[in-house]
Image (cartoon, rainbow, N blue to C red; front, side, top):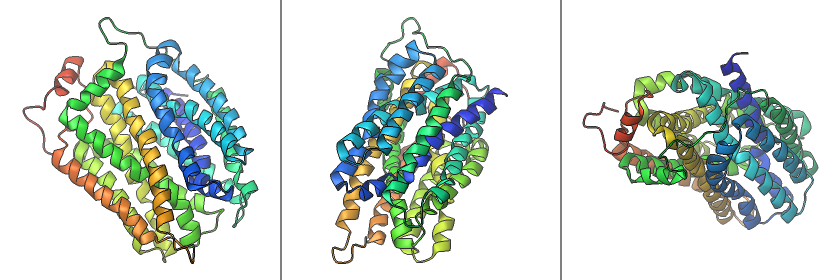
Length: 421
């Protein structure tokens, strides 16, 4: 197999682990009787893992272990932890196992990106197609649950989300050992070993700070979608419990198409417009949730916007970091943005959206005021669009490779002549 195909399959397995449990996590915790604060604490595990990942996977592991061996060990431990989650019905054992899984799985998301960027000839052009494998994995793993879950699934049935994820994790551990060898990075002379400090200092550059703020807002919106969407589809829209994951996976189907054309869209529109379109996808989807919940065809169709939401913003951010940031801090910068996307944004969404849902629940009927709930992320998305449109001035128009001197110059001052966005 070519390197691209091997990396594609790596992404298939990696995102299948995540996709197996993500849509049903919060509904399942509700079935187990976990209180809102307990659910929020579980949701915050990824924030802890993303923070630890900055110091461990990006500062220790990638300097002492080959990337593919790091993935193999992480997937193995993560699979065992997922088995523990599946058979834990009380809160503290559940939380402990889920936290262990998070600590070893979250860093693999940036490490796998690093493996892809290190082994692709033209990362800006080819990464979208490789990352599309993760989308395929997320879609494929949702289909077994049509048969494993009932229309009104019980907790004993829903625990299969973790057992399926564990099985995929074990397969990913074995496959990781076949990936292209990506040796540990060695510190270059004169380079700060704590490169994350240099990455943090780059927040002093205006366009980096703006992108950081917008990424935080959009990550809260994105993670909030996974907190509330399954309950919305089953409780309000009326979609069967064993079909809701398939309906949600339609967004990943659309993501396949958008990831496939992402390189050409970036070359045509540039960084800013591409990211704005991605955030507007969130605003449009939540607005449809708010006002068209009675139309199942419309709710199902709007899931297709997920492809635009993810590829045109989050995948673009990863490519932007690889194309523009100085080479010696790229890994740390990826970890820094992962801290927002997978960590801080996840934590905030895990606390805010359950609290909003609880506050907007009618005590008499138990129904949630979804229009009011969904107008919150819609407004946040529009605010992020304005912030990006008015203040984000990236140094390059598209994903072009520049040398080290050019990168340092681009990140210390705005270019004197910038192409329109």
